[in-house]
Structure formats: structure tokens, C-alpha cells
Length: 135
Image 1 (cartoon, rainbow, N blue to C red):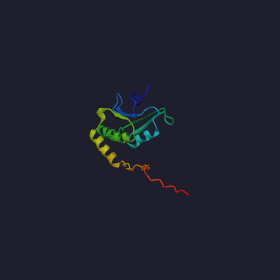
Image 2 (cartoon, rainbow, N blue to C red):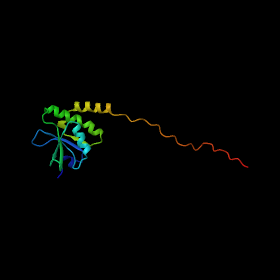
Image 3 (cartoon, rainbow, N blue to C red):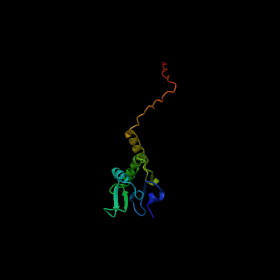
Image 4 (cartoon, one colour):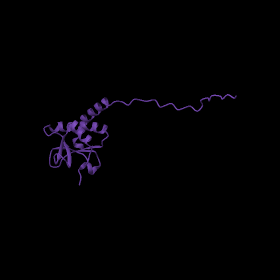
């Protein structure tokens, strides 16, 4: 049996672990290191079992934060994860809509806009061909 991300086919599942107040961010079994690194950059704490050569890797929102700050941190992580191409699900009770919207605006403002390129010119078939000279 896998974790929630394995079960739901997502890259990150954010939820409160049963019988606790801890907000978890579950990633699928074998998730890429860059996803784990990104979650850490976003303020989540990495946990591994066993330590050193982990079988299981998961993340939690730091427990020293207050309940509202925890929701805020979890919600702010979502736009960055989405822009990185990850499929994310969060328990609706954890979503801080204001924090999410603010983070989304920041991500959009910092996102480099693609350079608009002109399509290459097609060779014209109506181009005149040079006349051949007869000897």
C-alpha cells in the first residue's frame, strides 16, 4: 500500500495526518529529488526513514508555526509547485485562499515571459529563376 500521492495519482498531496494536527505533504514513491528539494525550498521539512538510504520520504509543515501560519505556508507552496509542472491536491480545510492568490500573483510576476519569436520565412516558390543563356 502506498501513500496518498500514490493512491490519488498526484505529485503532492497536502493533508492533516489522521489523529494529529501535523500537515503532511506526501509525494509518490520514487518521486524525483528535485521535487523533494523544491518542497524544502518552499519551507517544508523533509523526513526520511530509514535515514541515509530512505525507503520513505515525506514532508511536513514546521510544527513550531501556529495553525494559521501552517495553512498559509502550505497554501503559498501550491502555485510554485503548479508552475513547476506538478499535480497538487490540498485538503480544502487547509487552503488559505488569500495566501494562495498572493503567491500566485508573485509567481506570475516573477515568471519570465517567453520571447515572442517571428516564424521563419518560408521560401517563396514564385521567385524568378535566372534565365539560361544559349551558346
